[in-house]
Every structure is written in structure tokens, then in C-alpha cells.
Length: 163
Image (cartoon, rainbow, N blue to C red; front, top):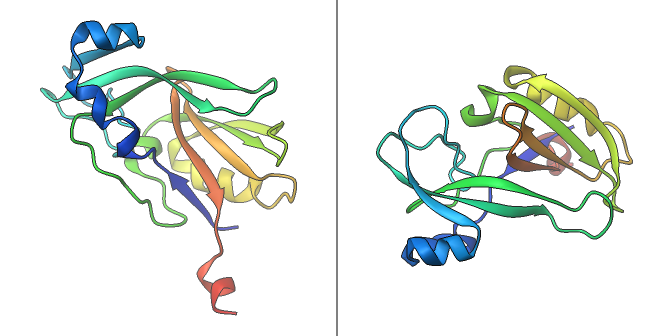
């Protein structure tokens, strides 16, 4: 089953870089300068930030649905990050190089499947999960530390799109 990993839109975060440190703190966020690579995965660019880059660390509501699985967690966003579109059936290095917790949800936003996979096995785990008809979408989280990485959705494969 074909899938596509989706990053977060840059437009949601660009305004944060114009805020003062005090204004960021009021929003439970903070500005940081990256001191190691890898280690600061940007959720917009789906790349690790480079040493010396400015990022904002903030709490992000990645599962805004009501109900028991509503969730938020800390994420990093790079200053001047641009929107990223990951090709179908591809896993970006920022995910492929980490241990990933995969959580899959049905249309009612109930978790119906979960597993942990090394990044180089994430594509297979996603494809296998999407063979289940009850799975509508998934969330990927870094298992160590466990912050939200990206969402993943079904897409029509090239072969089925041509039919």
C-alpha cells in the first residue's frame, strides 16, 4: 500500500521567530541555537538542523481530535524552514536514522495498531499497516526521545492511479 509522510506547514510557525524570548515563553516555547547534529529534527523541513542554526522548541498539538488520543508534544522548527513534500513511499533520513514508534488510527481517531521499528524498516511497517482497511492514517514519533515526527497517509500508487 502506498503512503506519504507529511511534514508540518511552515506558515504555522514562521511568526514565532519574530517574537521575543519573553513572548515565546508566554507560549510555552523557547528559542535555541543548535549545538549538535544530528539531534534537532525540524518538523517542517524533515531534516536535522545544522550546528549554529536557530530553532524554536514548542509544544505542538499533533492529534487535535477530541477523545482519549488527543495529544501534543514538543517539536523543533528551524528558522526559515521551507515546506517539504516527501515523495510517496519514501522515508526521509531524519526518520530513517532513528528508532520510530508508529501509531495508526481509524476514521474515529481511535488507535487500532501500534509498533516500534528501526528507521530503515519504517516503510515496510507503514505499508503493512495500511493493508488493514480500518487504518485511516498514522503518526510517527521518535521513540528516543518520543517527540512527534510526522503524519503518514495513504496515497494512490502510480499503478492504481493510471487505471
